[in-house]
Length: 69
Image 1: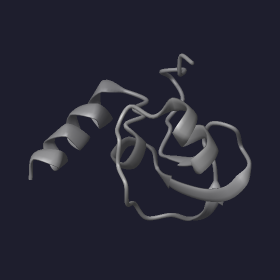
Image 2: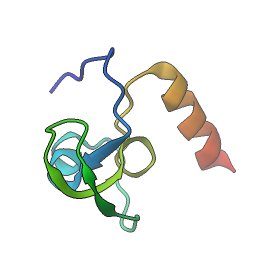
Image 3: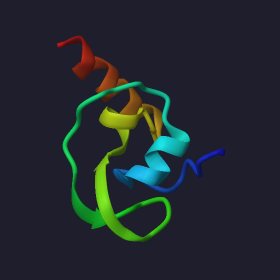
């Protein structure tokens, strides 16, 4: 699934995250919120850090820098 680059995706539900993931993480934090991809209220997690879903190159570069720390 190709993501729209003009929409900022900060948090995704676990269903959307598992469908579109590029990172393989075992443990991450979740909270109740609105998914930026499907719009449903559900348990969500950080799209970039936990699933590797980036809506722009700047977020991707920040996350890769954070992973190195």
